[in-house]
Image 1 (cartoon, rainbow, N blue to C red):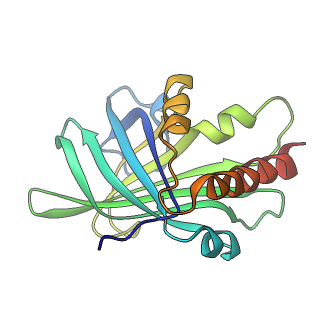
Image 2: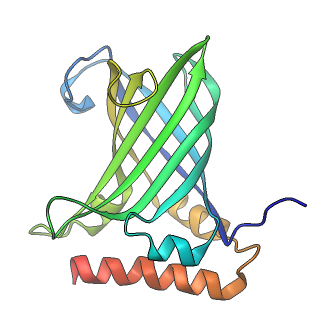
Length: 190
């Protein structure tokens, strides 16, 4: 019998990645960029465990589209963290990590959203922009190949919300997740 999770949803983030850079500068400073899309499926196996875990870790699967490599690169191993703590008590982080293979080599995509209420309206930018690095190898210690900022637009956000399903937990799991998500945003930005 296949395992049934408490919550599933799909998120698509896309944006320019600067190629061949060894620093951590982002594409606005570089002329040559290539679009990368992360088509992620997030799976929360147990809502109770997810909410109790201070790191709020979930499974991440799906695929990447990166034309220099391929239009469909399956994620072999992935991890998603929502509202995990940072060194700054006024900031929370969202992490997206995805390991994949291309032409017999292993690659690692890592992205972070920095959630912190700074002066001016920044909630939308903070929750929709993923600062992203691509490394050769199994993790972020490998050589840096590309940097960029992926983002979610209004259309993608609506698709994400429409994709939310709770195969095992039913409406109660959706409500608990919504309370957790909106409650954390309220705590950070209100």
